[in-house]
Image (cartoon, rainbow, N blue to C red; front, side):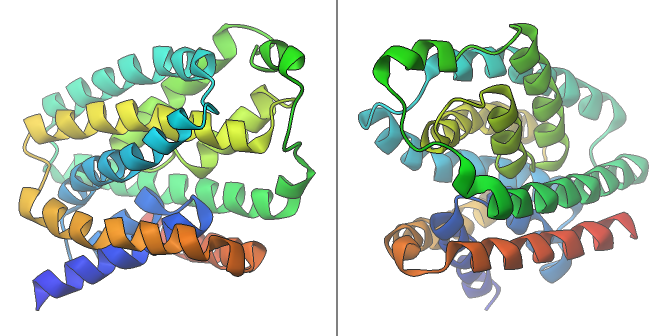
Length: 263
């Protein structure tokens, strides 16, 4: 029965990701901890590889559509990947199963979920105000941050957060990119965010695997459910009220964040 429950959980989260583009790590990690009683370090490590494999498929489509701005991806990754490796080293030194380490991980996860809830709700309120197209001659300028260090520093923060909690590469990443590149159309911001999340979650997930924080059979069951869920969600996306779904999702994330902080 547990196997079917894990597959269904993967399908449900995949469906939400397909509908909204948000909710992978934000939903899966709390579900694994609260519903199935998975230890926080195993939930986080497993979810990182879950995110890497689920977002990989979406990235191929974005690359074929030529909407990924690799300059942005490279600048953000220049900060996030080293920060992820440093965070993994610290986790290895502290011991991921150590009670004190797990307390740090759950508290940070709770705070990150609250930030994700705020970011998701912000997109409900302000998302429609973003441009959807840009003239080709303006694209080069639109992909330049005011200072080269801004995306690198942002990437470092996201890299540490994602490695420690498996959350942050989605909604928080999109909001910060919206602030760093205000002239860039929202579809290109989302594409850059997803493309950047793949190497980050893969590096962080493999790092967690190297210190024993990944449950491989659990990962296989989650992916079995999530892949058809994402396919169905992406096809239903145009028929569902996006703002209602995102509002409910932000409320759910806020609840999970508060519950994690209070553990």
